[in-house]
Picture 1 (cartoon, rainbow, N blue to C red):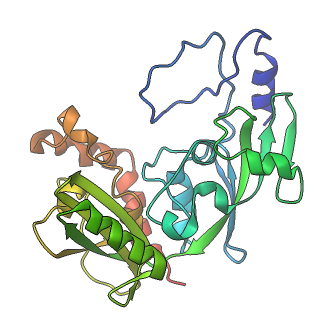
Picture 2 (cartoon, one colour; picture 1 turned 30 degrees about the horizontal axis):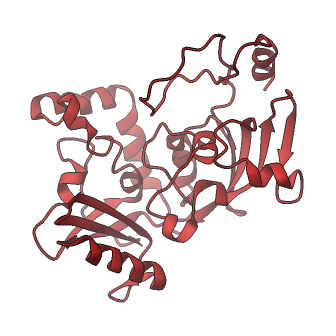
Length: 299
């Protein structure tokens, strides 16, 4: 926090204040900064996970990948996990985050219990429903105009080790919308509980609902971190296609191909794609993934 404050004080009065981020999921053009960004190097960690209270204290620039790694060990996950690993909690709360649990859990800011905010006046303020409540309510989706989040305390929910998937094929968008409305209203599909719900539209005549249900039952799972591509697995001509993933791989099912953007970079070509697992293994990703697959408990 002190490094953040020092970098804030060093910003000239006429310069704009911004964060110095090593990564970004934005590709839109932006005005070239006229001063160094705020030093967020000390704000990237999971501070603590309380399995009994089902809460986590998390630094504002912590990525969801780091948070999920810390919570799945306890059989818990954030109420909403945006689809890309490098999205930060601060970005999801002050910008906009949505995922397949949003039909029942809302948006990321709705699981925030309290937050520490660096305001434009250079003060650190703790905001909650009972303290600085106006700032607490206004801060979500404010895109940094009200300050930067230093720490969040968020709710967590229990998760099972696996997710059973049903991909429902539709030939008309009106039918997809009707099925979505029915699932949201009842929370079930054909008598089975629905924990995750998202839709993919390939064209006006080809769309799918991806319906997920948590389960502790062991069994074979798909792997979309290598040659297989998740969004292509959804496509089929009629009826329902079934699939199964670990909870870890389900949360990051879109990440490997950044939805379907990998095609534009040639990364869906088998020879190029074959290099990806080697790179991931050398970075230690696979050892972490394999450990999570075997240690996630069921509550």
